[in-house]
Image (tube, rainbow, N blue to C red):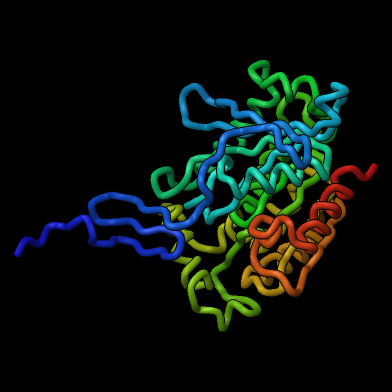
Length: 318
């Protein structure tokens, strides 16, 4: 009997997210189907796709609210990063198309939803590097006309859910090491951010099931084979308050969900930012009856609508 791997032999099993077979094949089990950009009939938001890098497969879907499109007005510029554990999902999926249409309309922003490269084909920090490339592209002469005409570089925001919240946090730290030309990062909002740490906290101590701590700890090392430990600051921001104090924005909004095992990390992050010596203002909202990234999975729900309104108020506050 041959000992060679067959097409059905699994090397890494991250069901229900992904299976990695010994023959090298990657099977993604979750994620919305890709849809084209469009003019959304409900919100009036327009979208289009742009290529960001001529050398790497980095692109984005841009969103333009109908108010800005009609009046050529300047509105806040939002860079958004989708979730999926760094392994699945896309800025072009039906799930994120609807989410960004609603968010763009509510907050009246020009949104740049970044299509970053996924692990394991592109191990971390590829996703962070791609996000930073997208920010710098938007500040360059190569940027799309929607950004140049309608994006207010004096009012720049970052946002993301789950792994995208982690990306937004780490991009805010990169802003602290040097702003792209003309950009003023005002704030960021993190929706059920994907952070971890070596030692379990809160409900993590008893949560060992699918998508619990044991499962996601393995995901971290799978997505980043060079990771030395879960207390590295980009995985566990609370482990190094000195690094955390370098956030380059004045306002942070953190959403957590009561039925999400990541809620304790969101709470820990909020407390650590407040204690770090960072001089800004942080707000925390926990929606007790909801689960992980509820506003993405059920954007029409009552709590999701409230969240869109809260984020809109956060972004447009003087």
